[in-house]
Image (tube, rainbow, N blue to C red; front, side):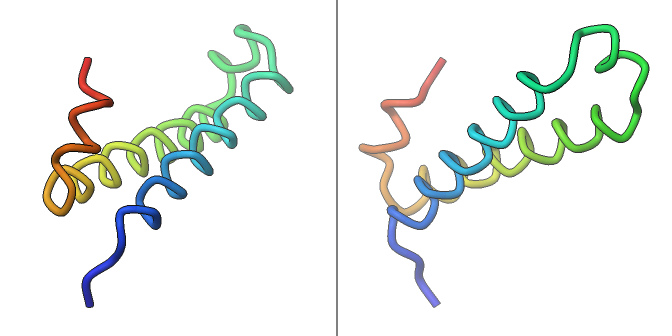
Length: 68
């Protein structure tokens, strides 16, 4: 099943919003001390990376907007 680019853009937006919520709710010290929090942030960043990879495959003109 081929997904539309909008699905991957939504995944990126949702993961970015989750990261913002995590960071707004915790201090840097809490981040460093809390392995679960670091794992959650890593998961969301991985989600963004995977969505960008899929986007690059099906809509490279959109993915190029996110380079660097």
